[in-house]
Amino acid sequence: QVQLVESGGGLVQAGGSLRLSCAASGRAFSSYAMGWFRQAPGKEREFVAVMARSANSTAYADSVKGRFTISRDNAKNTMYLQMNSLKPEDTAVYYCAARHGSTWSPFKYDYPYWGQGTQVTVSS
Image (cartoon, rainbow, N blue to C red; front, side, top):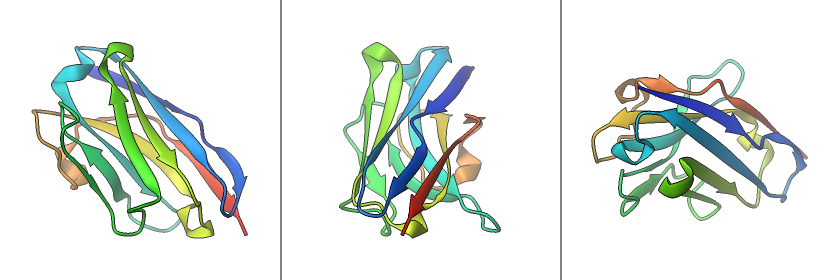
């Protein structure tokens, strides 16, 4: 199995940027499809961005399309989420997740491995 640790969250003003990282250890990182999800207070955990094992295919939630970019560096066992033009509604705990297989999925129940989350707060 794989262990995941997120970092890079923080407090930022609206319009600002943050880059989240997800460091993986354990079984070969390159064998997993990966994703970022987020959960705001009182809301369900939701899909943000996902990436295939080979990074040749990605998908984004409509709410972040054009502002967020998911990427991975298999040599460093790390996945990233570059977040630009942040809005107050992006405030949430952000989680990285991993699933077996080559293809991505936007459904949280398809991901058996999760990090502990990192808080992102966007002030207006």
